Length: 209
Picture 1 (cartoon, rainbow, N blue to C red):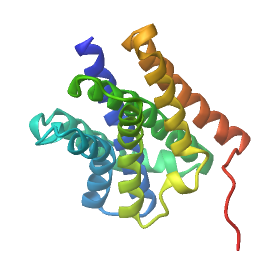
Picture 2 (picture 1 turned 30 degrees about the vertical axis):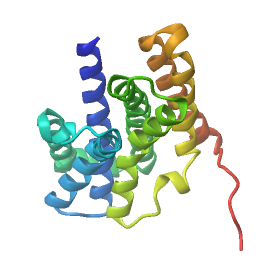
Picture 3 (picture 1 turned 45 degrees about the vertical axis):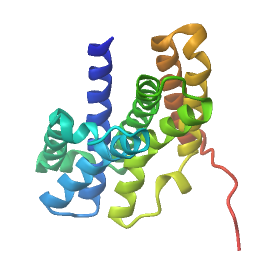
């Protein structure tokens, strides 16, 4: 189980680092900017999660593997060949961005809940769901703020709502179904909602004038 969780977290790290690096490249940032954006997106949610749970210093600073994977992924997506392949076709760029961002969101939402269970003796549902959502969306919020954009959670295809739904399902299934099925179910729900909302252009009601 520990090995599976490590693989899951590294996959989420790579996915979020890719989305951050792609945003930096689209903004025509230099190598340092792309790296910082990829790194921040990948580890930002986990740092916020650890601070909430009292895990200090955060795992990112205790185990460099997450920062190393995020950095390597960011540098790969900065390569001219990769940037040209993605930016040549806007639809391809949007699809890769959607998949990377959705994968990171789903993975970190459920791993946040897992860490809450490992850290707190008897966590309540509010703590579990809150930590899951913060872990999922935290890095993306930091990415968008640093890139000068309105955060995704306020404007794009029920982003935070997808994380909330996945966190709720994971928390509900945790005890009756077991941790692994609960995590997989929550992660799949996040991915499904994100992809369906992008395809069908679902959005929450917006405020107007």
